[in-house]
Length: 276
Image (cartoon, rainbow, N blue to C red; front, top):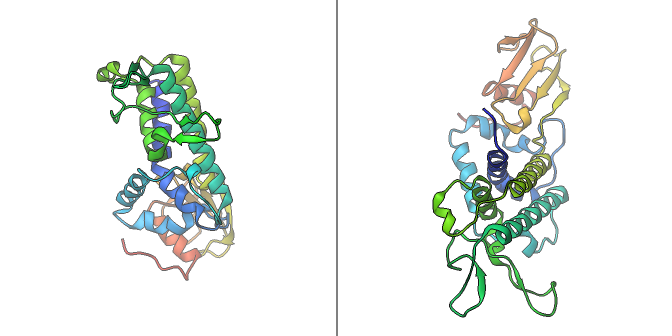
């Protein structure tokens, strides 16, 4: 089945929303060392062992709704400049894309005072409102428009315009042109890469400095699954002779899913493993 640019944009925007809470949290935390899934190291055991982890992540994402955009906040001493820079770039690009799309497809009308406005009803929550400025120049902001609701809402709105599959929207929006959908998909893809890179979740293979804690000789190679822990796997180079209590895959002991908890606990004995 072929994925359309609109569907791909929706998937990427959803991934950005789901990880936005983690990125905001990362701004206040010093970067972790890079030998074991950098940012996930702190929450790795919790994600695998706690049944309610998925619900917690959803609550984190929802908590971002209504927060002031990063560009409107002060950041006197962020602990992780890389995460802050990524978040600012993502927010700016997504907001600008929303402005562009609204100006192209949101149907204009006159408000109660006879002024032209985008959308039939300025109070309609489905509409995107662009920033307004005083005559003093573009640096003098009068209203932040829909940006005040934050990145999460912007991504939801942009996803709707990328998919453009609700007939009820025709009263508010013209069909989104294919070239514009391509632009949305490009912004969404870039934003997702920036989030995952800032959080250390880009797909890669890592060879740990520590020897295998079970055979004391092999090297542990971790394939991080691009941040998807369901695809993450760690293997020992010793092969089937390693006494680790896990299955063998392609001639090597392999840790997946919950088994990774045991491996990380063995590598870091001082770490308290949460109950499953």
